[in-house]
Image (cartoon, rainbow, N blue to C red; front, side, top):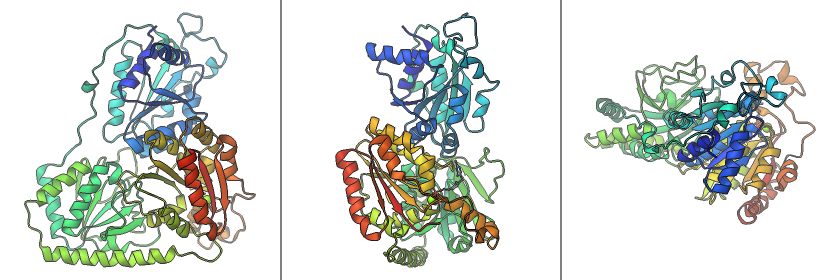
Length: 570
Ligand SMILES: Cc1ncc(C[n+]2csc(CCOP(=O)(O)OP(=O)(O)O)c2C)c(N)n1
Ligand SMILES: [Mg+2]
């Protein structure tokens, strides 16, 4: 037996897919049959994992790709399973995550003309006019298999698109009749389907950027995700140290530059004040950022020269987007930074100027570090997020991956966890809440020997479909520690309201629709769904013991632990 379904699975295997995160339906008999046949005949197809919720499935593929760089596959049920991918698709797009999503389509014959023809009532209900239109705002490529004959080529083309910069999700559809087609196998040489080579700068441009940074009085790098390619971090660090260039992160979604480096100036989100370091810079080099500052509240000096090097500098999928820059380059930042460093090898920086710049920025760094140390001291009988995060920091070793969907505590994590290893720290990269649980499963599957810690707000925990996540985590043995920064609801929309209406009615109201009152027993959901260790803590003196026990459960018992940490409420 060799059907289009078999060819599809074979192509995924050839493309390096290890896991198919699947939520099945009446559209998938060919695939289910081929997997069962493959298990008997030993075809070695990717493992198919049952995902009771589609958003968790795609978030798992997302976390896997973040932790390993490898694109995985997601299978969903026709148009309704596609809808249920929900905001995970937005996250995959904005996170620039390579992933192949396949959805069946309802059969296109109804009188048994072909194998797979309609034989269930729902197949009329699931026929819509443009299934691919559901996702077209969010994928790099969408296509429907018209025949089984070239199904492998189409999968490899889709994967080539997904894995080429700027990376992103791709969506394929196949109706039952196409997937049932009996085929003669087609041989593919995967070496002939590479992703595009990383784009370099032109040599002159690299030299010009090097010269501008070298001659600047207050040179500054602004970045959000240069560290998505961990190789870029070393080149950036080398560049900054040799010239005394500082780094400011804007809404960082991964580890970009060591927060302990004296040239690290901190991280900005949407705080309503002008950033002094940004205002003082005379040369600003933006590296990989979708929004390098929020111009209404903070921006570079009008006299500053701005360079922008980005894997996707035009952001053509963000309709209203403009940030003034004099020089804009589409390039892979790891390559570009190596080129700028190579250009500097032939130049002679003024060592006195480098020393002065380094001393200036080091002084600012130390002042900031002192303030952060002060904030993480224990504060009476309450657990502050800063104190808790500082305690957690001591447990994060070199073998740990941390995920954060902590919303109003994003800055707390950046400042007090201080992730300093490239490739060890991730946010979703998007803004649709609920990535944290599935992503932890994916990261653990990608790196089974690492400890995975997923941090989330109480709202983000509920968005993550914890029943699905923890059922999967037990079934597929992906233990991780989940910490809930529980402030009793959605602090973020409350802050958004107060930022626009500081003295308004909402500022004086007792409740504005963001409170979780009465509170759910969050950790117990995970215990019920997946046998997770569950604990709620409220006092600072409980923190150390709870963290030690939770991590022991994860590392030794290989069981999930969910720690509900009560921080000051809304
Ligand atoms: C899918 C989705 N729905 C709604 C929102 C709007 N939203 C942004 S932050 C937030 C609250 C998050 O709550 P929590 O995780 O507890 O973090 P907190 O704001 O309390 O720090 C909401 C509802 C969103 N970003 N994504
Ligand atoms: Mg909250």
